Amino acid sequence: MLKRSLPFATLLLALACNAPGDAVPAKPAEPFKPSLSLRPVAVSLAKGATQAFQAEINYPEGMRYMRQPVAWRVVEPEGGTIDGTGLYTAPAAAGTYHVQVKREDFPEVSATATVTVK
Image 1 (cartoon, rainbow, N blue to C red):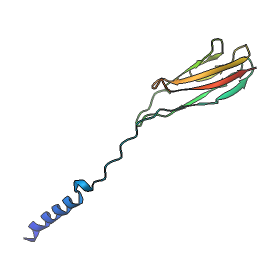
Image 2 (image 1 turned 30 degrees about the vertical axis):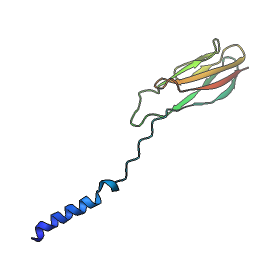
Image 3 (image 1 turned 120 degrees about the vertical axis):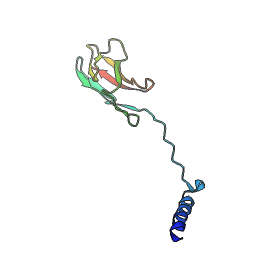
Image 4 (image 1 turned 90 degrees about the vertical axis):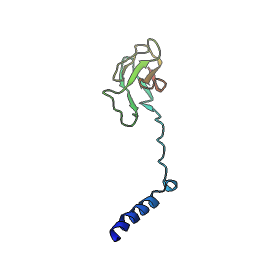
């Protein structure tokens, strides 16, 4: 008789500990917020000089990419050139120019740096 009542008592105890009203709900996952930062944000260069820019992004949880999904551009025409790695070459004309980097996976996210060429 003792053997039959022991599993029943264990079942009652398990049900009492797992009552639906006592469960703590899991915290909902925060929505992913893409970010992008650019360094340096301002630089002064001589005509024809080069400057390496760096973009830093965050990734959705569990996601990794073969390459950093960013696209570089110089905003002003004739404002110099920038390659796919972020290496900027200043133009032969003095002025103020802007380097922009944009996330390819979230195109609405971008950052801009100011380049003063002397």
